[in-house]
Amino acid sequence: MKKNVIRLNKDYQDLIPTYLESRVKDIITIRKAVQNRDFNLIDNITHNLIGSGKTFGFDFISDTALKIRSNIKTKNSDGIIKNVEKIEHYLSGLEIKYVDEDEL
Image (cartoon, rainbow, N blue to C red; front, side, top):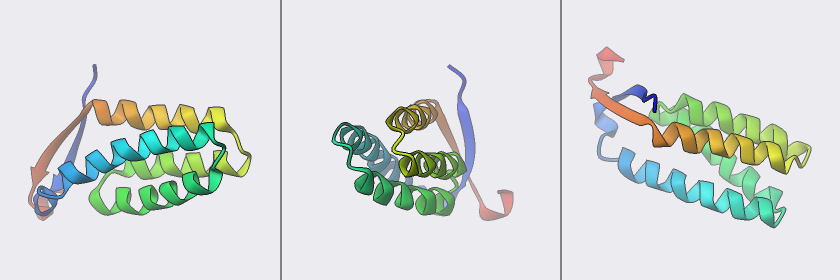
């Protein structure tokens, strides 16, 4: 499997494991919400993903969450699941290198 290597500010090193665990929980919640057609819940989660992903340096998560929000507007459950799977794949191949801010 190809690794997704990203460089993150070492100041976030203590926060990232909990952040990533929360993303796994979000994926589970989104999958359940799709089954229940709870698009408001999915919208709330993706809103948080967009902001937090960019904050911590996980642009792929933010960008994919934006795609999910587009799928919400059309109630496209298949599109939501497809993009959730992209986030899952990204997370499963993630390799993080912590660096000083001036090395980002």
